[in-house]
Image 1 (spheres, rainbow, N blue to C red):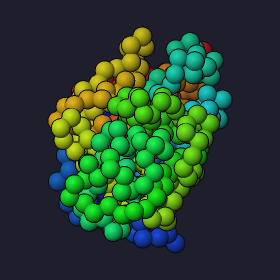
Image 2 (spheres, one colour):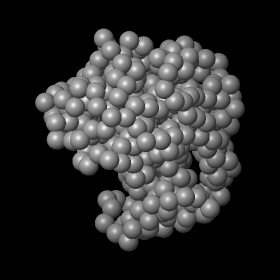
Image 3 (cartoon, rainbow, N blue to C red):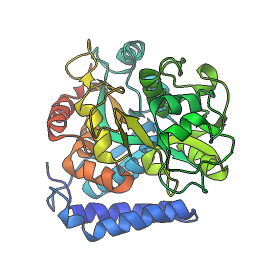
Length: 386
């Protein structure tokens, strides 16, 4: 299957981001500048061949994780260049809402920062055609940045697992707390209240972040891995809707700290996180290594690629607060048009070109060639059911 050249893809992504940013703020301009700069060297990106194209037609409906929003712009634009008669729509309503919409039949696929739980898989058997249900395809790997607003602090803030858990569990409430100071002997920390900002909506990013806290500091973060902070978490701190809400609230209040997909934090600084004897700053490469040290969820079908992430790793160079975001699709649909659309788009997303488009628009880490080939085999098996 031939995809358009990287120069064509990069140009389409930059154009779409310019349109999306019209009337926006400084962060939107930063995204456009990054995409435009990337087009200048796009021929150096690996793979890709000019020509080709797809004859698929129709509209594909997706809904889900807001963390995928920037990546989805890249995927939509690149796919449009490949399949001009097809349209992909995506409503970034959050992971929980995306899974609910998909399972109720309101969308053709879901984007989710949390894989389908066993109960949700059983629902997918009823939602999809046939008896195979839905599978999780890990198409997006990205660090979750711990962004903060401390303009008086010069240098990168370092946070050990216990300290980070204490901040969000509300047991550490001032920036000059001795525990924070112990992690940062070279920084002058202000006498200022900590304002932890969390997602107020049901969120896969929250689930990934709290899964990390639960794994590395279970005696401090005693709430487990949760998707709904206000319902199941500490019940304090500032809530904000969606990834953009967390970033906006963190930026608006001095002393604030929040968690968000790293592609969305703009010019906010982000903490280096304690891993073993090191403090690791986020990067796509460091986040991607979390998959290398993790295993697939046991008891699933061979076509399902849900991962149990090893959050408490002490491996050097691994950034452990990462999300592996999935596209959740049926293995059987009710029409050939829908099958052709879903196969074509998901093949594009997981291709070398599609992963480059995501990296260009969202700074994500490409999936490995081995995972790519395995996912392609699953996508090829999608068919019309009865």
